[in-house]
Image (tube, rainbow, N blue to C red):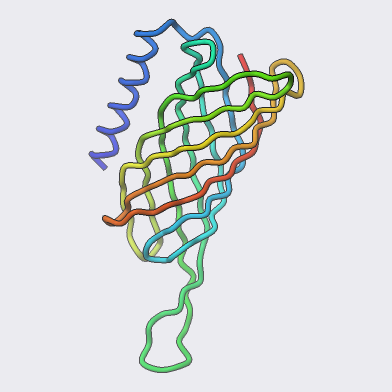
Length: 184
C-alpha cells in the first residue's frame, strides 16, 4: 500500500510541475463513462470486467494536455476446483481492478470530431475474493475520438492497451470506454 502512495504522490507532483513549467491550463475537459475491460488476471486467466472510467484533462499547449485517468472494473469468473476425481465442483471468484494513470494527450479538432492519442503511466491494483491482491506499475497507450453534440458536451469513444505486471508476470489488457465529456 505504501508503494501506491509513493507512486501516486510522484505522479501528482510531476503533473503539477508540468503545469507550472508550461502555461497554466485555461481549457480542458472532464470525462466519465462506462468501461469494458478484457483483463488477464494471471490466476483466473482472461476475464471480461465492466465498470467505470473517468479522466480530467488540462490543456498546457493548444494540442497537448496532461491527463489524470482513473478506472475501476469488476466481475466474476467460474473456475473449476482441483479435485481427485470427477465431477469437480466449480466456484465463482469475484475480481476487481483499479487503475490510476497520468500522462500527456495529443489532440486536434476537425469539425465536430476531436481525435486524440495518449500515453499514460501509473499504478494498478487487482484483488479477488479468494486469490488475494497485488499492486504494480501500469502503462496505457491508446486513443479515441470525441464527437461534439453541442459546445460544452461531447460523446467519447476510447480504446486503450493497458499493461500491468501483477504477481511478477506481465498482463496485456484491452479497455474500451464510452461516455460523456464536459469541456471547459
